[in-house]
Each structure stands twice: as structure tokens, then as C-alpha cells.
Image (tube, helix red, strand yellow):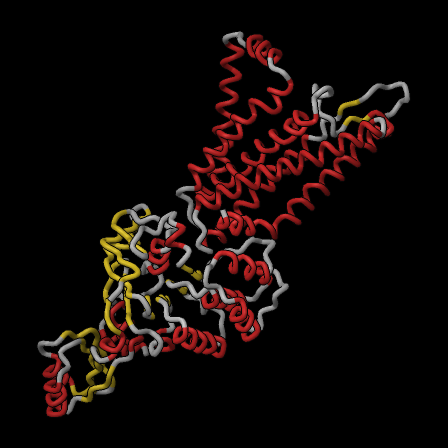
Length: 301
Length: 231
């Protein structure tokens, strides 16, 4: 694999808070990544460091074989679309397109105007007068039309309705097929993008929890439902992420160790196995430890 | 060089705004000054210098601050480096200073041709530079403009790093330092030395010479601050 990004032991502290804790990974070229994690997990901070917008407290980052900070050769190949991007007060949508065209080498004006038409972006309107959804559409348009070899989308979907989000996913896939590049999508709408992303990076409280192929992850966890003793029998020796009781039955979320042998065992114990979606897996892996017992939660339902 | 030209385009949408507000405010200040001079005018009076020209320079500080605080976060988001941004803003400050100086030279020429607007009001003319050649005159307008624009950029970089609190703290520190220096000079009875030094300088050195050093100091300070700024 040709790595476009390598990160070694990246740590970022804000006072006593450790936003990123010894994070190491590599991003391959021509791959779509999902950067997942709860709010405050460190996703935006990581992307800011990778794009030279913020400074790591320690650790090394290399983008296209060089440090990204203050490096025009690297940054000209990088586009970072932030949900919280600030635009100058006096900028119209047209100004954004004009400046983007000058700053991104691979910018495709026709593609940008096509996207703007699809998203119904009014070219003459001041950016600060755009609705939440239109602002997101503007960011998405810039990120796609820039065709940067390394593109980051930091939750650009906020405010986009489901139809507009689908439009974004469709355009991204179609353009990616013609112009392969490395794309990093940070999002909470995991189910929506789970067919799009090829690899998953999962951050939890500043630590990198997963760095795996999305396909592998989809088969890695199941829910096992059955009578308590049966589920206990099945779960023995396996990693149990979560357990809940419902009307005499127990449903357990189990990670790893799910070969053909496990399926035979489940059948014998009369335990029903169901694959866990990527979103459910992320929820189970990153949910905070609860103080209430499972039985109490059942009552609260 | 080409890259710098592309980065310079980030400021283009602001120019109608910056120039429009600067010269409209100047026009208003000029109009009010003219009215008040007319109200008190006596044909026997000589020429009154209003000092209203300073407003053009005051407005330029604010405009420079706003242009940096508004556009820098966007520039960073568009993969522009801090160094490119700062270099371009410094170069555009030079361009702006020269263009404004040309306009002021023109207004000064109109002022003299109309006999000080017909009422003896010197608004745009620089003091002590009546005999200066055109190049020195241009510098006399342009260099102080370069100083104030870089002061505005410096304020903006302080704001980028430490927010409004940083700007107020910085101003408080600056005023404290200047006040203490003044007190020290008074204490040691050294004002006459400073006065003599000032009198020894030519008007050109005072308006176009020494201020270059001040502008360079502001520019260096701003650059040091923006190098670690985040959006």
C-alpha cells in the first residue's frame, strides 16, 4: 500500500485535557475512510493536525512524505471541509468558488456548478445568509470539486436533508470512481455511509480503538439472543460487549470468535445469532459504562 | 509568485468594502469639518489646519484588523499556509498604502488649487511638508499608512491567538509601558533631549524615515504571532 498519511504517536493536550492520546495509523491512497467516534473523541483535532491547521503536542505526522505544517507543496494536495468552517462576512457563494478555483490545482469548475445546481445553491447570496443545509451543501461542493488527492469531510452533512445527503454520497462515489483519491469522512450517520467506506478508524476519548477494513468489522460482532443459560454457554470464552434482558430472554453483543464452530454451537444451544451493523458496533464499543444495572435499564425502556 | 497572486485574490471581495467604507467615512469627516470651519469663517483669517486627515489612518487600522480576522480562518481552511497569508497581506498593505497616498496627494493638490476649499481649511495637506518634492510627499503619506495597517494586522494576530481578552490585555500592557516610559522621562527631566532630537530630524525622516522601522517591527511581531495561530 502507498501511504499518503502516516501518524506516529500523535498526542494533543489542551491544558489537562488529552484530546488525542498516542494515535498511530497510516492512510493508503485511493481509499475511502470513515473516521468515527463520539463527540469530543478527537476527530476534528486529528484532521486539523493532519492538515497543518493545528499543532500536535507530540508525535510525528507525515502527509505525502512530508510534515504538513506550513508546507505549501503538501497542502496544495489537501482539502479539509469543516462543518464549522468560517467564511468572511462579505463573501458570497460565488466568491467561495472563485477563490477555491485559484487555490486547488485540480478544481473542476463545471463539476462545481453542476453540484451547486443540484443542491440549489444561490451563487449571489452572502454565505452568512445561507441556511444550515445550504452551508453544508457549499462545503460538500467545495470538497468534491477541489478533487484534492487527500480530502477530509468533517461532518459536512449537518443540516442536509436525507435526499441531499444521498445526492452527496452518489456524487462522491461516482467522482471517486473516475478520479480516485483518499477521502476521510467523519460522521455520526454510520449506517448511511457504511456501504461507502472501505476502512474504519474509530476514535474513543482520544485513543484509536479500531483501524480495520469495514467488511471485516461487519462480520466481527453479533447479537446472541436466547435463554440466559444458553447465552451464558455461548458467551463463555468470548468477548461480551453488552447484555440486555427482555421478557425472559437475554440478548448479548459478542465480539470476535465467530467461526463456523460458533454457529454450530449457537444452533445446538438454540441461540439466535444476528450480525451487528457497523453503527451498532461503534455504539457498543464507545458507549460509556453505565451506572444502572441491565435489569434497571429494561424497566426504563 | 503565482501562488501569492492566487492567495491575494482572497482579499479582492473585501476591497469594495474596505475602500468604500474608508472613503465614505473620510468624506463625512471632511464634510463636518468643512461645515464647522465655514460656520466660524472670517475672510481675514489665515489657513486653519484641522488634523482631520488622521481619521483616514484611524479607519485603516480597523479595516486591516477586520480583513485579517475575517479572511484568515477561511484561508487556512482553503489550505493556504500562514506564511503565504502573512506575506500577501504585508505586500497588499504596501500596495494599499501607495494607492491611498496617491489619492491623498491628489486631494492635497485640489485643496491647494481651490485656495484651501475657499475657506482656508487645510484638511489633506501634511504639516511641515509644503516644500517637499512629489516623491517625498508620496512617502510622507504612504509610510505612516503602512505603519497603521501593520498595527491593525498586529491587533488581528493577537486576536487570532488570544481573542478579545488578548487584544485588551495587549493594549493595557502597551499603554502601561508607554505611560511608565513617559513618567520615567519626566522624572529624569529628559523631555528636552527628546524634543531636541525631534527638532533635529527633517520632516521627511519623521514621516517617511523612522516610521519604516516601526512598520517593520509591527510586521515582525505579527508574523511571529500568526505562525502558531489556528482558525
